[in-house]
Image 1 (tube, rainbow, N blue to C red):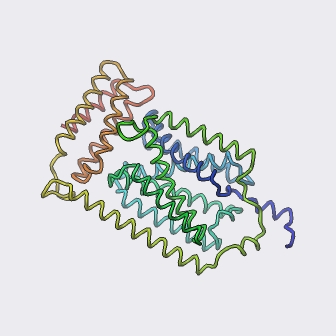
Image 2 (tube, rainbow, N blue to C red):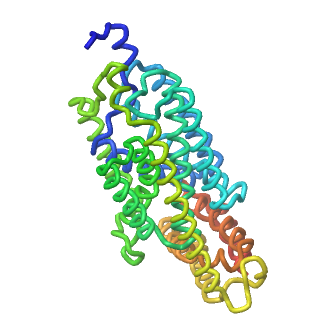
Image 3 (cartoon, one colour):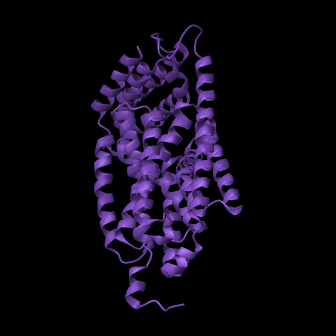
Length: 404
Protein backbone atom coordinates (compact mmCIF):
# COMPACT_ATOMS: atom_id res chain seq x y z
CA UNK A 1 0.00 0.00 0.00
CA UNK A 2 1.28 3.44 -0.88
CA UNK A 3 2.25 5.33 2.28
CA UNK A 4 0.06 8.32 3.18
CA UNK A 5 1.87 11.63 3.36
CA UNK A 6 1.77 13.61 6.64
CA UNK A 7 -0.36 16.42 5.18
CA UNK A 8 -2.89 13.86 3.89
CA UNK A 9 -3.09 12.25 7.33
CA UNK A 10 -3.82 15.66 8.89
CA UNK A 11 -6.57 16.32 6.37
CA UNK A 12 -8.13 12.92 6.95
CA UNK A 13 -8.37 13.01 10.75
CA UNK A 14 -12.00 12.22 11.57
CA UNK A 15 -14.13 14.82 13.36
CA UNK A 16 -16.59 12.28 14.82
CA UNK A 17 -16.22 9.23 17.09
CA UNK A 18 -16.25 5.58 16.19
CA UNK A 19 -19.65 3.94 16.72
CA UNK A 20 -19.13 1.80 19.81
CA UNK A 21 -21.31 0.87 22.78
CA UNK A 22 -20.03 4.07 24.43
CA UNK A 23 -21.36 6.11 21.51
CA UNK A 24 -24.90 4.79 21.93
CA UNK A 25 -24.90 5.09 25.72
CA UNK A 26 -23.78 8.73 25.68
CA UNK A 27 -26.16 9.55 22.84
CA UNK A 28 -29.17 8.21 24.76
CA UNK A 29 -28.03 9.97 27.95
CA UNK A 30 -27.63 13.26 26.07
CA UNK A 31 -31.10 12.87 24.63
CA UNK A 32 -32.68 12.38 28.05
CA UNK A 33 -30.77 15.17 29.79
CA UNK A 34 -31.33 17.46 26.81
CA UNK A 35 -35.07 17.17 27.20
CA UNK A 36 -35.04 17.75 30.97
CA UNK A 37 -32.65 20.69 30.54
CA UNK A 38 -35.05 22.30 28.07
CA UNK A 39 -37.90 21.85 30.55
CA UNK A 40 -35.77 23.34 33.33
CA UNK A 41 -35.01 26.49 31.32
CA UNK A 42 -38.55 26.74 29.98
CA UNK A 43 -40.46 26.14 33.21
CA UNK A 44 -38.22 26.36 36.28
CA UNK A 45 -36.23 29.41 35.15
CA UNK A 46 -39.35 30.83 33.46
CA UNK A 47 -37.53 31.54 30.17
CA UNK A 48 -40.53 30.38 28.20
CA UNK A 49 -40.29 28.40 24.99
CA UNK A 50 -39.01 31.33 22.92
CA UNK A 51 -36.43 32.40 25.51
CA UNK A 52 -35.20 28.84 25.93
CA UNK A 53 -34.85 28.50 22.16
CA UNK A 54 -32.79 31.70 21.93
CA UNK A 55 -30.46 30.78 24.80
CA UNK A 56 -29.96 27.25 23.50
CA UNK A 57 -29.45 28.50 19.94
CA UNK A 58 -26.70 30.91 21.04
CA UNK A 59 -24.92 28.20 23.05
CA UNK A 60 -25.23 25.77 20.14
CA UNK A 61 -23.71 28.26 17.69
CA UNK A 62 -20.76 28.76 20.07
CA UNK A 63 -20.25 25.00 20.42
CA UNK A 64 -20.54 24.48 16.66
CA UNK A 65 -17.92 27.19 16.06
CA UNK A 66 -15.46 25.42 18.36
CA UNK A 67 -16.30 22.04 16.83
CA UNK A 68 -15.68 23.26 13.27
CA UNK A 69 -12.46 25.03 14.28
CA UNK A 70 -11.01 21.90 15.85
CA UNK A 71 -8.74 19.82 13.63
CA UNK A 72 -9.78 16.44 14.99
CA UNK A 73 -12.34 14.66 17.11
CA UNK A 74 -12.30 15.94 20.70
CA UNK A 75 -14.79 14.03 22.93
CA UNK A 76 -15.69 16.96 25.20
CA UNK A 77 -16.42 19.37 22.35
CA UNK A 78 -18.21 16.80 20.20
CA UNK A 79 -20.57 15.56 22.93
CA UNK A 80 -21.28 19.08 24.19
CA UNK A 81 -22.42 19.89 20.65
CA UNK A 82 -24.61 16.77 20.55
CA UNK A 83 -26.09 17.70 23.94
CA UNK A 84 -26.98 21.21 22.80
CA UNK A 85 -28.28 20.13 19.41
CA UNK A 86 -30.50 17.57 21.15
CA UNK A 87 -32.10 20.41 23.13
CA UNK A 88 -32.40 22.66 20.10
CA UNK A 89 -33.84 19.93 17.89
CA UNK A 90 -36.46 19.22 20.55
CA UNK A 91 -37.27 22.92 20.81
CA UNK A 92 -37.75 23.23 17.05
CA UNK A 93 -40.56 20.68 17.21
CA UNK A 94 -41.98 22.16 20.43
CA UNK A 95 -42.13 25.64 18.87
CA UNK A 96 -43.93 24.33 15.81
CA UNK A 97 -46.44 22.49 18.01
CA UNK A 98 -47.01 24.92 20.88
CA UNK A 99 -46.39 28.34 19.31
CA UNK A 100 -47.58 27.73 15.75
CA UNK A 101 -50.14 25.01 16.41
CA UNK A 102 -48.73 22.67 13.75
CA UNK A 103 -49.91 19.08 14.34
CA UNK A 104 -47.27 16.50 15.21
CA UNK A 105 -48.36 14.47 12.20
CA UNK A 106 -47.35 17.35 9.93
CA UNK A 107 -44.06 17.93 11.77
CA UNK A 108 -43.19 14.23 11.49
CA UNK A 109 -43.79 14.24 7.74
CA UNK A 110 -41.96 17.54 7.18
CA UNK A 111 -38.87 16.50 9.13
CA UNK A 112 -38.86 13.10 7.43
CA UNK A 113 -38.80 14.80 4.04
CA UNK A 114 -36.15 17.29 5.22
CA UNK A 115 -33.97 14.42 6.45
CA UNK A 116 -34.34 12.49 3.19
CA UNK A 117 -33.44 15.59 1.15
CA UNK A 118 -30.38 16.17 3.34
CA UNK A 119 -29.23 12.61 2.69
CA UNK A 120 -29.84 13.05 -1.06
CA UNK A 121 -27.81 16.27 -1.28
CA UNK A 122 -25.11 14.84 0.98
CA UNK A 123 -24.72 11.75 -1.19
CA UNK A 124 -24.96 13.73 -4.44
CA UNK A 125 -22.04 15.92 -3.35
CA UNK A 126 -19.89 13.43 -1.45
CA UNK A 127 -20.85 9.97 -2.86
CA UNK A 128 -20.99 8.56 0.68
CA UNK A 129 -23.02 8.95 3.88
CA UNK A 130 -20.60 7.08 6.11
CA UNK A 131 -19.64 8.77 9.37
CA UNK A 132 -16.19 7.29 8.85
CA UNK A 133 -15.69 9.85 6.09
CA UNK A 134 -16.23 13.07 8.10
CA UNK A 135 -12.87 14.69 7.45
CA UNK A 136 -13.85 17.77 5.41
CA UNK A 137 -15.83 20.88 6.42
CA UNK A 138 -18.59 20.24 3.89
CA UNK A 139 -19.14 16.67 5.06
CA UNK A 140 -19.15 17.87 8.64
CA UNK A 141 -21.80 20.47 7.77
CA UNK A 142 -23.99 17.77 6.21
CA UNK A 143 -23.38 15.57 9.25
CA UNK A 144 -24.55 18.16 11.80
CA UNK A 145 -27.54 19.20 9.71
CA UNK A 146 -28.55 15.55 9.60
CA UNK A 147 -28.12 15.25 13.37
CA UNK A 148 -30.40 18.28 13.87
CA UNK A 149 -33.15 16.79 11.71
CA UNK A 150 -32.87 13.40 13.42
CA UNK A 151 -33.52 15.02 16.80
CA UNK A 152 -36.40 17.11 15.47
CA UNK A 153 -37.91 14.07 13.74
CA UNK A 154 -37.34 11.84 16.75
CA UNK A 155 -39.08 14.40 18.96
CA UNK A 156 -42.06 14.77 16.63
CA UNK A 157 -42.48 11.02 16.08
CA UNK A 158 -41.94 10.17 19.75
CA UNK A 159 -44.40 12.80 21.01
CA UNK A 160 -46.90 11.73 18.35
CA UNK A 161 -46.78 8.16 19.62
CA UNK A 162 -46.54 8.85 23.34
CA UNK A 163 -48.86 11.85 23.65
CA UNK A 164 -51.12 12.40 20.65
CA UNK A 165 -51.83 8.68 20.20
CA UNK A 166 -51.82 8.11 23.95
CA UNK A 167 -49.38 5.19 23.96
CA UNK A 168 -47.30 6.62 26.78
CA UNK A 169 -43.52 6.64 26.94
CA UNK A 170 -43.17 3.08 28.23
CA UNK A 171 -45.04 1.56 25.29
CA UNK A 172 -43.35 3.99 22.90
CA UNK A 173 -39.97 2.98 24.30
CA UNK A 174 -40.80 -0.71 23.84
CA UNK A 175 -41.77 -0.12 20.20
CA UNK A 176 -38.60 1.86 19.57
CA UNK A 177 -36.47 -0.84 21.20
CA UNK A 178 -38.10 -3.42 18.95
CA UNK A 179 -37.26 -1.38 15.84
CA UNK A 180 -33.65 -0.92 16.97
CA UNK A 181 -33.36 -4.66 17.70
CA UNK A 182 -34.69 -5.53 14.26
CA UNK A 183 -32.23 -3.11 12.64
CA UNK A 184 -29.37 -4.64 14.63
CA UNK A 185 -30.28 -8.17 13.52
CA UNK A 186 -30.75 -7.00 9.93
CA UNK A 187 -27.32 -5.33 10.04
CA UNK A 188 -25.75 -8.56 11.28
CA UNK A 189 -27.41 -10.34 8.37
CA UNK A 190 -26.07 -7.93 5.75
CA UNK A 191 -28.08 -4.68 5.96
CA UNK A 192 -25.99 -1.67 4.98
CA UNK A 193 -24.26 -0.32 8.10
CA UNK A 194 -24.87 3.33 7.21
CA UNK A 195 -28.61 2.75 6.72
CA UNK A 196 -28.90 0.81 9.98
CA UNK A 197 -26.93 3.49 11.85
CA UNK A 198 -29.12 6.43 10.84
CA UNK A 199 -32.37 4.59 11.54
CA UNK A 200 -31.09 3.64 14.99
CA UNK A 201 -29.90 7.21 15.56
CA UNK A 202 -33.41 8.56 14.95
CA UNK A 203 -35.00 5.93 17.18
CA UNK A 204 -32.71 6.52 20.16
CA UNK A 205 -34.27 9.97 20.66
CA UNK A 206 -37.73 8.71 21.74
CA UNK A 207 -35.96 5.85 23.54
CA UNK A 208 -34.01 8.34 25.65
CA UNK A 209 -37.20 10.25 26.43
CA UNK A 210 -38.91 7.01 27.47
CA UNK A 211 -36.08 6.05 29.81
CA UNK A 212 -36.03 9.50 31.38
CA UNK A 213 -39.80 9.50 31.84
CA UNK A 214 -39.73 6.03 33.44
CA UNK A 215 -37.03 7.04 35.92
CA UNK A 216 -38.47 10.46 36.81
CA UNK A 217 -42.22 9.72 37.00
CA UNK A 218 -43.82 8.84 40.33
CA UNK A 219 -44.45 5.22 41.21
CA UNK A 220 -48.21 5.86 41.04
CA UNK A 221 -47.71 6.68 37.36
CA UNK A 222 -45.59 3.63 36.62
CA UNK A 223 -42.17 5.23 37.14
CA UNK A 224 -39.39 4.81 39.67
CA UNK A 225 -40.07 8.17 41.27
CA UNK A 226 -36.52 9.57 41.08
CA UNK A 227 -37.74 12.95 39.87
CA UNK A 228 -36.42 15.05 36.98
CA UNK A 229 -33.63 16.69 39.03
CA UNK A 230 -32.16 13.44 40.37
CA UNK A 231 -32.51 11.72 37.01
CA UNK A 232 -30.76 14.60 35.25
CA UNK A 233 -27.96 14.66 37.84
CA UNK A 234 -27.35 10.92 37.46
CA UNK A 235 -27.26 11.15 33.67
CA UNK A 236 -25.00 14.22 33.61
CA UNK A 237 -22.49 12.51 35.93
CA UNK A 238 -22.61 9.40 33.74
CA UNK A 239 -21.98 11.48 30.60
CA UNK A 240 -19.04 13.30 32.18
CA UNK A 241 -17.45 10.06 33.40
CA UNK A 242 -17.80 8.41 29.99
CA UNK A 243 -16.45 11.45 28.13
CA UNK A 244 -13.47 11.65 30.49
CA UNK A 245 -12.87 7.92 30.02
CA UNK A 246 -12.94 8.25 26.24
CA UNK A 247 -10.70 11.34 26.33
CA UNK A 248 -8.08 9.39 28.27
CA UNK A 249 -8.30 5.99 26.58
CA UNK A 250 -9.16 7.24 23.05
CA UNK A 251 -11.16 4.07 22.52
CA UNK A 252 -13.61 5.75 20.17
CA UNK A 253 -11.16 7.20 17.67
CA UNK A 254 -11.80 6.20 14.06
CA UNK A 255 -8.69 4.59 12.52
CA UNK A 256 -7.20 6.65 9.72
CA UNK A 257 -7.48 4.80 6.42
CA UNK A 258 -6.50 5.72 2.94
CA UNK A 259 -9.16 6.84 0.50
CA UNK A 260 -8.66 3.72 -1.63
CA UNK A 261 -9.12 1.48 1.39
CA UNK A 262 -12.36 3.24 2.37
CA UNK A 263 -13.72 2.93 -1.14
CA UNK A 264 -12.82 -0.73 -1.36
CA UNK A 265 -14.85 -1.60 1.75
CA UNK A 266 -18.03 0.18 0.61
CA UNK A 267 -20.85 -2.08 -0.70
CA UNK A 268 -22.19 -1.80 -4.22
CA UNK A 269 -24.51 1.17 -4.80
CA UNK A 270 -27.22 -0.98 -6.35
CA UNK A 271 -27.31 -3.23 -3.28
CA UNK A 272 -27.58 -0.29 -0.92
CA UNK A 273 -30.25 1.38 -3.05
CA UNK A 274 -32.68 -1.53 -2.96
CA UNK A 275 -32.05 -1.99 0.76
CA UNK A 276 -32.94 1.67 1.37
CA UNK A 277 -36.11 1.37 -0.71
CA UNK A 278 -37.25 -1.82 1.03
CA UNK A 279 -36.45 -0.68 4.59
CA UNK A 280 -37.99 2.78 4.18
CA UNK A 281 -41.10 1.26 2.55
CA UNK A 282 -41.52 -1.23 5.41
CA UNK A 283 -41.11 1.51 8.04
CA UNK A 284 -43.59 3.83 6.30
CA UNK A 285 -46.18 1.07 5.85
CA UNK A 286 -45.78 -0.13 9.45
CA UNK A 287 -45.96 3.41 10.85
CA UNK A 288 -48.93 4.34 8.68
CA UNK A 289 -50.84 1.19 9.59
CA UNK A 290 -50.11 1.61 13.29
CA UNK A 291 -51.21 5.25 13.20
CA UNK A 292 -54.42 4.39 11.35
CA UNK A 293 -55.39 1.63 13.77
CA UNK A 294 -54.57 3.65 16.90
CA UNK A 295 -56.29 6.78 15.59
CA UNK A 296 -59.43 4.78 14.79
CA UNK A 297 -59.44 3.23 18.25
CA UNK A 298 -59.33 6.71 19.80
CA UNK A 299 -62.18 7.81 17.55
CA UNK A 300 -64.23 4.77 18.58
CA UNK A 301 -63.78 5.79 22.23
CA UNK A 302 -65.44 9.17 21.64
CA UNK A 303 -68.96 9.76 22.95
CA UNK A 304 -71.52 8.22 20.60
CA UNK A 305 -72.49 10.50 17.74
CA UNK A 306 -69.46 12.77 18.12
CA UNK A 307 -66.25 13.19 16.14
CA UNK A 308 -63.09 15.21 16.42
CA UNK A 309 -64.24 17.49 13.63
CA UNK A 310 -67.80 18.15 14.86
CA UNK A 311 -67.67 17.86 18.63
CA UNK A 312 -68.29 21.18 20.40
CA UNK A 313 -69.20 20.06 23.89
CA UNK A 314 -66.80 20.43 26.80
CA UNK A 315 -64.72 17.56 28.15
CA UNK A 316 -66.23 14.92 30.45
CA UNK A 317 -67.05 16.51 33.79
CA UNK A 318 -65.03 13.95 35.76
CA UNK A 319 -61.90 15.18 34.02
CA UNK A 320 -62.78 18.86 34.39
CA UNK A 321 -63.62 18.42 38.08
CA UNK A 322 -60.29 16.72 38.73
CA UNK A 323 -58.27 19.42 36.92
CA UNK A 324 -60.25 22.18 38.65
CA UNK A 325 -59.75 20.61 42.10
CA UNK A 326 -55.98 20.37 41.66
CA UNK A 327 -55.83 23.94 40.32
CA UNK A 328 -57.84 25.30 43.25
CA UNK A 329 -55.66 23.38 45.71
CA UNK A 330 -52.55 24.87 44.12
CA UNK A 331 -54.08 28.35 44.24
CA UNK A 332 -54.86 27.93 47.95
CA UNK A 333 -51.26 26.92 48.64
CA UNK A 334 -49.95 29.95 46.74
CA UNK A 335 -52.26 32.26 48.67
CA UNK A 336 -51.11 30.62 51.93
CA UNK A 337 -47.49 31.45 51.05
CA UNK A 338 -46.40 27.85 50.57
CA UNK A 339 -44.69 27.76 47.12
CA UNK A 340 -42.94 24.44 47.79
CA UNK A 341 -46.22 22.62 48.39
CA UNK A 342 -47.74 24.43 45.41
CA UNK A 343 -44.99 23.07 43.16
CA UNK A 344 -45.67 19.55 44.41
CA UNK A 345 -49.41 19.86 43.88
CA UNK A 346 -49.12 21.37 40.42
CA UNK A 347 -47.13 18.29 39.36
CA UNK A 348 -50.33 16.31 39.95
CA UNK A 349 -52.05 18.60 37.46
CA UNK A 350 -49.33 18.06 34.87
CA UNK A 351 -49.45 14.28 35.34
CA UNK A 352 -53.26 14.08 35.15
CA UNK A 353 -53.35 16.32 32.07
CA UNK A 354 -50.66 14.34 30.25
CA UNK A 355 -52.38 11.02 30.96
CA UNK A 356 -55.68 12.30 29.56
CA UNK A 357 -54.17 14.30 26.68
CA UNK A 358 -54.71 11.81 23.83
CA UNK A 359 -58.32 11.10 24.80
CA UNK A 360 -59.30 14.74 25.41
CA UNK A 361 -57.55 15.99 22.29
CA UNK A 362 -59.60 13.55 20.23
CA UNK A 363 -62.83 14.86 21.78
CA UNK A 364 -62.21 18.54 21.15
CA UNK A 365 -58.84 19.70 19.82
CA UNK A 366 -59.65 23.43 20.09
CA UNK A 367 -60.65 23.11 23.73
CA UNK A 368 -57.60 20.97 24.43
CA UNK A 369 -55.23 23.59 22.98
CA UNK A 370 -56.85 26.33 25.09
CA UNK A 371 -56.51 24.39 28.34
CA UNK A 372 -53.02 23.16 27.45
CA UNK A 373 -51.80 26.71 26.90
CA UNK A 374 -53.27 27.84 30.24
CA UNK A 375 -51.66 24.90 32.07
CA UNK A 376 -48.27 25.67 30.50
CA UNK A 377 -48.47 29.21 31.90
CA UNK A 378 -49.33 27.87 35.35
CA UNK A 379 -46.39 25.43 35.28
CA UNK A 380 -43.95 28.18 34.29
CA UNK A 381 -45.10 30.52 37.04
CA UNK A 382 -45.44 28.03 39.89
CA UNK A 383 -42.19 26.20 39.11
CA UNK A 384 -40.08 29.31 38.65
CA UNK A 385 -36.88 29.38 40.74
CA UNK A 386 -38.22 32.51 42.46
CA UNK A 387 -41.98 32.33 41.90
CA UNK A 388 -43.93 35.58 41.99
CA UNK A 389 -47.05 35.06 44.12
CA UNK A 390 -49.15 37.52 42.14
CA UNK A 391 -48.13 36.01 38.79
CA UNK A 392 -48.83 32.50 40.08
CA UNK A 393 -52.22 33.58 41.39
CA UNK A 394 -53.13 35.27 38.09
CA UNK A 395 -52.19 32.21 35.99
CA UNK A 396 -54.08 29.83 38.29
CA UNK A 397 -57.19 32.01 38.32
CA UNK A 398 -57.02 32.21 34.52
CA UNK A 399 -56.88 28.39 34.35
CA UNK A 400 -59.88 28.07 36.69
CA UNK A 401 -61.75 30.47 34.42
CA UNK A 402 -60.88 28.36 31.36
CA UNK A 403 -61.97 25.15 33.11
CA UNK A 404 -65.26 26.77 34.10
